[in-house]
Each structure stands twice: as structure tokens, then as C-alpha cells.
Length: 139
Image 1 (cartoon, one colour):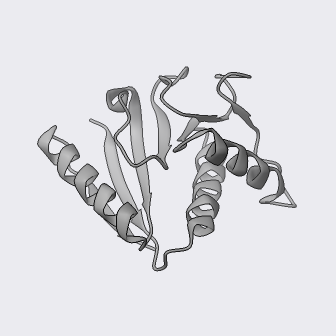
Image 2 (cartoon, one colour):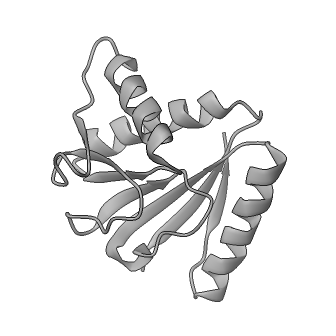
């Protein structure tokens, strides 16, 4: 069954969510997992793409937009199904992925912004309704 975790950040800084996504993507990639980062919209995909280029000066995180290479080690996308089975989904969107069962692990990154907190609480309940056992991780 898919492992689901909600990583909770202590502040409401939107850039903090993107930095956490970069850290988690780097960690997943280093452990040999294909990583799919599901963004809220195309603008967030572009912002994350730029951040991934400069995130680690000592090591490049290989990534591509889904349209350019859905088989890249780290893929930035929206509603697409993962091209690689059993990958890690880092969900930055406010809704559940329509492809939950195709991932071995899902991480939702939550900060203290009120609208995001409400959406993530709804997602937590939806996962439970669908038979998953989501966990909360304080960062």
C-alpha cells in the first residue's frame, strides 16, 4: 500500500515549501527513487525548475518538465500519471493526485498558511476515507 506522509513546516513561507520539495527530491533521487513533483500550476513548475538548478551548488539534481522528459530522475508536472512505476510523489498541489495508487510513497508538504492548512486537512481525511493511513511529520 502507498505510504503517505504530511511534512509540516513551522511557518507560512511559500518558498520554504519549495525548498523542502527540493530537499526531498534530492534525497529520493540519491536513494534511487524516481521522483514526481506535482505542482499547483505551470508557474510553480517554472519556479521550482529554477530553484532546482541553484538549490545545491555542490551537486546537480537532474530534473525535467514532464513534457520534456517524463523518464527523468526528478519530473516536474501537474496532473500527469507517473511514467515510472513505484515512484515518490511530492505533492505541492492542494488536491489529491488522480494517480495515488501508482506511487509507492506520497509526501504532502504543509506550511502554516491558513488556506493550505485547510486543504491539507481535507486531503488527510480523504486519504483516510480511501483506506490509507497518512502520517504527520513535524519539521
